[in-house]
Image (tube, rainbow, N blue to C red; front, side, top):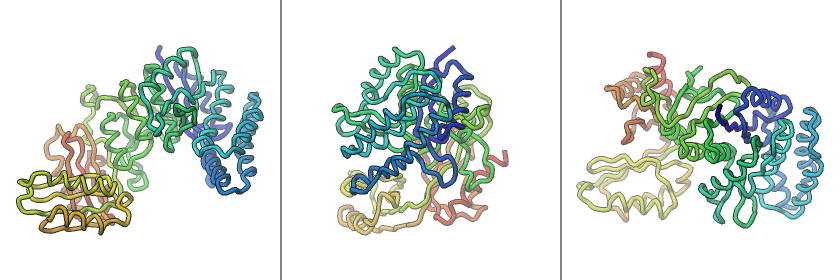
Length: 443
């Protein structure tokens, strides 16, 4: 016997049909004692997520436009669920309270959070669990930064009073009592915080996919599933564009060494992907696969700086970082040689300031030359076992060479857990297919 925290995403709680599946999953395992829910998602193509409708309400309020019909659509969704599932929670009372607050022009965070709030009330009644509001338990400072230790203490103290409970994801509150939300997808973080607070044996994250895939299925046809992945590997893949779990949800669970299991509500018998502190080699599992996954993103710009005797010039890289800080631009990678250093920036972060950044580099660094490579894509090949196998880099470069993909940049992490290559945007999909076919299909 143990304790499991189960978080159900928007697709898992979109309507009465999905909620019935959710209840069956929870009832099947009595260890699933603490449930975190998102707001209802889309029920079909062309449908609206509840959170999107609530943000639209707020936009209308801010522009002095009628919003009653939009909110009525939201209310109708919940009332239909209450009716279809035979729940009796006096929903009109909660809806009237929210309507009254909408007339006071509340914050966007408050308005958006009501999706999770109402859903958690309904789900708690449907399951026969206690409803525990996360306002006052998930704690943010005045600047909106999550207070991990204070949150952990508040959740632990409150949940010790409830044998079973349903909590709304996505939001908490600041010291003055105002509602504060995470970024979109933040219910994942709530689930991880709850799992840490109660020292759960496992944190299950139920969604509409059966875990992580080794590559993007829009690029690689029927990619294999990742059965087990370490926190570090997941961090690398998430950073490079793989998306199933909110990136920040890894941190609280990792701190408490709580395994995360990504599961599919529509295919509950699928084992999903297990995320643990150790990679399969360290855990003693028999897995001959060299790589764990491949992920990447398009639209980067690389500024390559050359200066003779750069390695002897103290503070050169520090001045590069100072210039980026002045422009409030994060760099993605900084591969370097004896007399060269390349600054990799996303086009989104760079915006229309490329010429200004180059001019600042020229004036403050006085390089011998500056080369700019635009329309670049970055691809990360990730896996702990790569460091135990000789010839991995050679195999990767040969695969890209055979596919006639020109490598414009190479950067290998110090942990030897990833190899990142830069290619032109036009070669992005071809490169991922070549790497996947070489390391996965040929095994």
